[in-house]
View 1 (cartoon, rainbow, N blue to C red):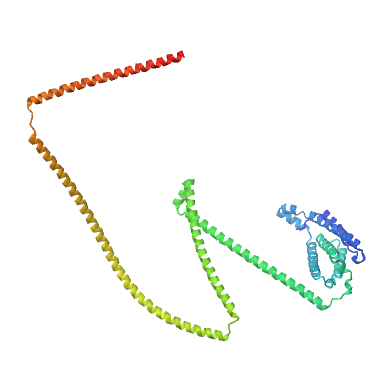
View 2 (cartoon, one colour; view 1 turned 90 degrees about the vertical axis):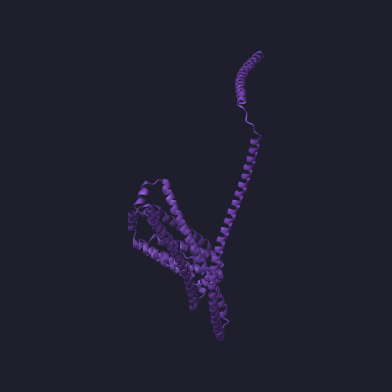
Length: 460
């Protein structure tokens, strides 16, 4: 929005009036130096007016205000002045675009006939602007003056610098007939139509992209809502879940959330896999259809009515052969069905026999293992019997050779044994006493050695 103070508006109006008054000079009566000076002065005036206009807008201040203050600022501006300024800007913009088209055609083709009527039209437009500026000096908007001044000065300077020697002749040396005017109008209409079509195509493309984004955002919103619902159902199924949530620790909640997220990611991956499979299937189908369309497009210029009749005959023949093959295949399927039934029955019988054979093999293996175990046990029993027989034979031999001692010999042997035991005890006591003496002497020797070492160290 264009907002400015009363001081800036009065200053801009004086600058715009001065610029409009200065544009009354006829460029055809001035020399080249005068034209250049006039163009420079007009450009400086336009720059000054543009700077004052931009400074008077105060857009940063306006956007920082609240909505009520913005409405108050907007209410101070006259709507009629804004409407008139907008009309002037649109009119000058259309004129500048039309002049730009003429000048581009002139520069591309280097034909001075394309500039016929351009200078006269500019002069009439400038006169109209001057009369409007003089009549409505008090109500004219700053935007309209800013729209007319830079466009007129820039177009005039551009014309004086680009045309050069091609404009030595006046515009009245040539006459433009109606056919040329119609061609030019048709050309401009075609260009406008082309631009409109381009704009429509771009707009439709952007609309499609935006619709796609909207659908994507809608799907994302639906997914988030469904996820939130599932999340709530996962955590709040009944009163026990509520009690768990009120008493659960952070680790328990973290485990539950991770479990939910992992399940959600698994479901999403499965859904993505199914979508990818569907996309690949659709892509293959589209590629097949495109290849068929390409083959049909290649044959479209060659085929005739006779070819279509031949194709129909060939189609009927192929259909008949296909029916015959289908009948043959049906018979083969019936035969194969019967054969498969018999094969399944035989297979079942073979499976039963195989199961019985496996059971018998297992039983025989168990019996063989039991026999081996019994043989080992029998061998062990035989060995033990042989050992017992040998021991019995030895005992019998000893009994045959053994002579029982008398009572006197037994008493003597007993007395000898008791005397030897006493001697053994006495010897053990002596050995114990000697060991104690040995330990004492060793301790004394160690003490003497330590004293000797200390004495030697002191001497040193």
